[in-house]
Image (cartoon, rainbow, N blue to C red; front, side):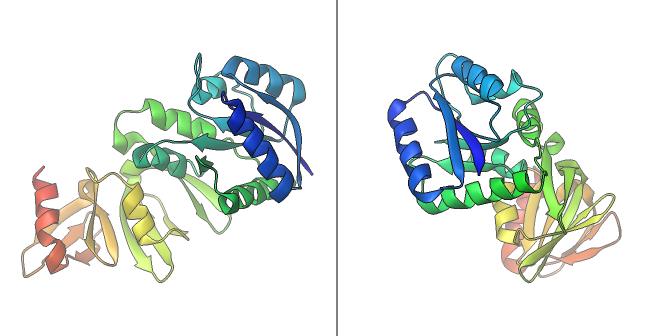
Amino acid sequence: MITAVIIDDEQKNVSMLVGLLQQYCPQTMLLGTANSAAEGKKVIENLKPQLVFLDIEMPYGNGFDLLQSLPGLEAEVIFITAFDQYAINAFRYAALDYLLKPVNIEELEDAVVRAEQRITEKNTIRNYELLLHNKEEPDPAKQTIALKDRGQQHMVQLSEIMYIIADGSYTHIHTLTRVIVSTKNLKELENMLPQTIFCRIHHGHIVNKVHIARIQKGRGGSVTMKDGKVLEVAVRRKDDFLKMIRK
């Protein structure tokens, strides 16, 4: 059993989530609810839950403000949001769970199971601090992504990623210091990473333009990365790639 609180300014959303947790997530024991960031801070400090369901958009202080006011928070956080794709990528960078409104039952169940596993393993990770960092960092190259490799988590600044190569259902992420084997597929990473920096030049790989040493001409051509790796450019992706480089 894991203890939880819900912080959401709309009571109808709170009531709906309470009902879903009771019906589909019996491993959660609800300790309390709050309808504002200020009230939520008191609830968290007094009840010390293991899991917090946190709405982002609230009047008089949003979910980010609440997190910044609790620098010692050890609880798992599942965000509830109606944010667009760009903002959702911020949660993905930080490897944080989020639920889009209206809440999907299967996604709720999966998020709670993951939180329960981390809590049981005493492996609570304060990745919300990474989320707050990225939110305040205007330069995409200086933002950081959390990547798991064989159960170990690595915090990698986007500027350190040189290129990514597909390997079946896995990807090999080549950084300046290590190669990370990720379960995220190439399409998922392509959708996450900023197109001002990264370009998918082939069905099997993505490159960071900053780490390109040379471009070889040809029907599609190829690129040589700064570590000496040569990667083919697909013919159908050549024009988009060259436009991106010129920018």
